[in-house]
Image (cartoon, rainbow, N blue to C red; front, side, top):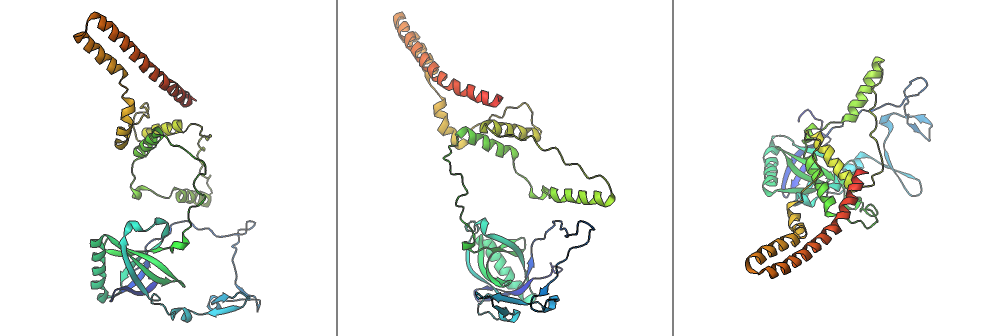
Amino acid sequence: MLHVRSIWNGAISFGLVSIPIKLVNATESHSISFRQIHTEDGGRIRYRKFCELEDREVTQGEIGKGYEDADGSIIPITDEDLSSLPIPTAKTIEIVAFVPADRIDPLQMDAAYYLQASGAPAAKPYTLLREALKRSNKVAIAKFALRGRERLGMLRVVGDAIAMHGLLWPDEVRAPEGVAPDADVTVRDKELDLADALMDTLGEVDLEDLHDEYREAVEEVIAAKAAGEALPQAPEPAAGGKVLDLMAALENSVRAARESRGEEAGEHAEVKSLPQRKTARAAPKQTGGKKSASTAKKTAAKKTTASAKKSTAKSGQGTKKTASKSTAKKTPAKKTASRKRSA
């Protein structure tokens, strides 16, 4: 960690305990950057900074900061002005509370940093805070100032280090108004079962196995152009089409996911209900029409006369007809679903 350049030096304020630390970036970007060029001759396009009063180019050392007032006048602000702000967080990460991690909305998450203990005297209080966070299963909420503004932070333990995630202020997170569909949509249990099956089939993933395929493809294009070779061909786009049948799309998705995992291609994408849903749906499926008729016949055979058997048989036929009607009601739905899938 020592080879990483710190971007801020200060201290963690933990009650009356002060922990000298250095703030270092916890992440790095691997994206490919491009330069702007003149397309006719490949010359670099550069931006030059001019003073509009003197109409001349100025160096970086001549550039400072200024605030534009409502009337258009500029008020110069120096680094010394900002370093002497009358707030306790100017050079301090001030812990204000400890809360469960699930209290933090991921939408508030911003940049991530590591807090590095600065010098031998910081080792003991740093370790104390780290172990206290571990034992409490909580995260620390702190305020700190960085790059000209006060910010919120969340401190948590990562390995043997303390990391801090910058947090947006609550009023910086927009409410999701107008994002959800306006239409009143009903989702059937069968559709949820297929969605659950698709989630289970896709399974989990080790994030270490994921990589930036777009960056790799761009690198291939750059290498091919540098060598004067033909550019790699883009794969044919998947055949698109408007999804008219959600159930068919879900079933096909489950089937495709199973095939990609090496399961049998011909296996049906039929799904059992989730355990908590089985109880709720089991009752309607157990139509007792045929069982009742069968039981009635057996009882009648043992305990009644031949005339009673005829009477029971008639009752049994009535029950069968009722069951047939019930089955008939369900049959068109199955045929419709079959037609949708075949379509």
